[in-house]
Image (tube, rainbow, N blue to C red; front, top):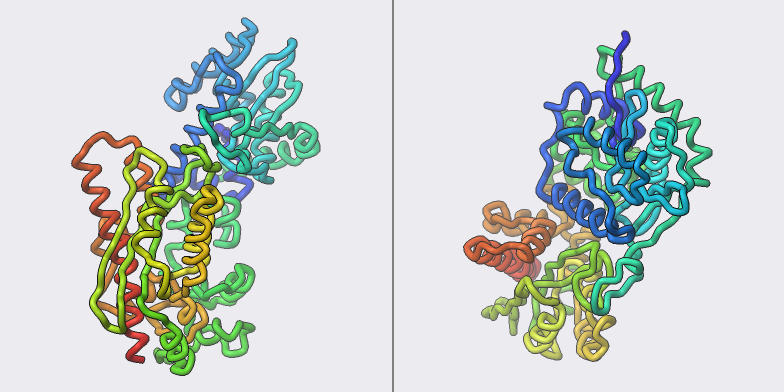
Length: 492
């Protein structure tokens, strides 16, 4: 069948991951998953980083306005600008046969062309080399000689102080020597993709590790539609290899896992619980945990957001910025609760106002109860590292932290409803069915991060008020949930 279809850089990378994904993307786009708000936020942040990187080579001519509505204009304008020796072009477009690519930055120095691909990452990943090799192949096949091609990525060691220094924020690494040996394989893959795309049949490729490596496939919902919400893929800490080993044997339901299949003790408990429907409670361990608690108890939960571009002094790219906490205080078992909270204003650095209020609210004695000690400990440690004057108070807090997640991660308390998870989102409804996150406008930590991040550019006061109320409700439930979970453990 004589069939030709355009293959872009992103399509090439998709095809490397899975031919079926590429075929569906070209022929059955209606089956594609909808882009989630979190995915769109990632795309938007990547775009912002790309625009900022253009300042490394200022005063270029930007052709992005023609993408994707008028590709032919990008190609013709690129040819015209190359002919006029324009020194720098953003989103220069090249097409060779049915291959096309758009270069983030193309600049001419001492009569030679240099290409730069911008990535919102902190290292040069293997997949970046493949897409850069594809670009190099298309550009050079179009008749343009490239002196060098580099990847621009984020330097996560950069600490902002004062105005943003883009020369420190970005790292530029030449990859030409690494991609030249890849070109024969690039051409081979392109040839195979063209043949595959020209076929009337969807490639017969089953689900596998490639569905999420290196990216989560946008056709996952279609390809995984026959996998139930709870399956062998939810067995806690089971390797991907073993999950697909079970799947390839036709075993999908957790209850169907053979008794002799190699599993850890905790995994065996999860499978056995699914088969019997019985709850497992280690009374000795639970009693030891609750008896170790020293009142008053401070139930603490943080919310954070990240930015690839550091926004404040003494902050680094992609640093977790703690902007909110909820704190329920209980002075005796089953005693009354006092609630304190903090939610930063989305305009200034949230860390100092947060830590100063937390120091005042959390006292100097009594256990601090969290759900995932590693996360909360890391956040306050980072604040103390960035602002050493709070080190003594932070060290006092760290010494008092106890992890409510442990009885569940170690399966001292396990119910079938937890479905292999020990996250608070699964533990709470299993132990306290009357409480749920389902009715909340914000029901996940990732959603909370996106919601707060959005406030930095929001001007509608009604929307601001609504988001802030949603954030307070969500974080407040996280700490109240811990109160109720402890109550259940006391009665076990």
